[in-house]
Length: 476
Image (cartoon, rainbow, N blue to C red):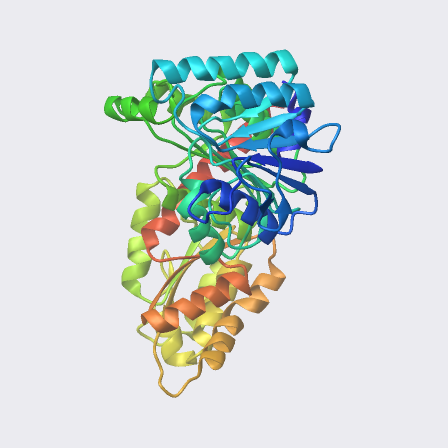
């Protein structure tokens, strides 16, 4: 695979948009607007014979009229029947890469399939790489380059890159992600029908990208076949790969075929190969971003030994139960920790499988949480702390004071133990909880989750990945 040829989809010097528009209701309008709003520094050439000027930029009647010897990349957003003739112009102009966002190809019917085959033939003869058709395109947060027609609200750089076969992520999910998550993106690689560039090439490209630390994929089928697993096996040893694959059932596979023209893959085989290659498989987008958030914010221990700390006894018991159900090891606290915590508790308090904060708070007041957390994260038997944090409303305390109290619980323990992981379930009044969660994630880089089960499911996924890495290390 010549993955170096894919760099044009993220780092071009110039771009032409065929189907660019001044009409805000047209997709061609938003592609140009995104490039302007994201401050892409390369040259932008709108192409549409109906206009002389598009959003303040000179418009051209065709690609061949653009005053450049070569065009790095062309985005095509026109009716499907017009695409082959535009591809011929791209070949004449020496275009390196084309993103076809238009739909109505093999995912639609036999005629669409023939159009797609014609496009592929022209591209191969001219040495043009093609992403799509039927895609929402690509996005590079570093330089503001994009070929997508969905609104990109801001340039929010981060360690996650996303490969999506469909527009779900690059659409509303992207807006939700950028406005709600406290970490950003490196790149988005929308693949569509994968008539040329496939998921294996995209994965290998992102594996070599220094800005990408974590790779997430949404796929409906496989185009690269066995190759994606060969690539994943190498990549997952250096960068975590999280995959959500739909079309798991027969009816789902049929729906995928009509959506992106994807071919079905037996789900049990796919699941087995994921385990063998270190791919972290998730069941939905919620679980995907739960896992990603933990990987972004926290270190990955070499072995997962969980210590549970809870303000409520019920929370501690539920945590232990769930860890046992999902195969996550709850470690016993050291004798030193047990004796120390016991010495600070009232007579009725006892240290068991987990640290119950409530007795400590009775005796130590607001220092009870801090003592419990620091004791757990300092413990030699613990590599990860599952912390149940209850935020009680107090009308006499301001938001700033509440934030300071929460920070005091964690700051010293985190400083002393940067290699240990922490995951939080937080609960409290909605208004207070929202700003505390934002503070914990933005300021302290502590991942918060609305349920204990979501915390434990994340730990279970990471536990499987940790065991895979250890097996690889032991065998190498």
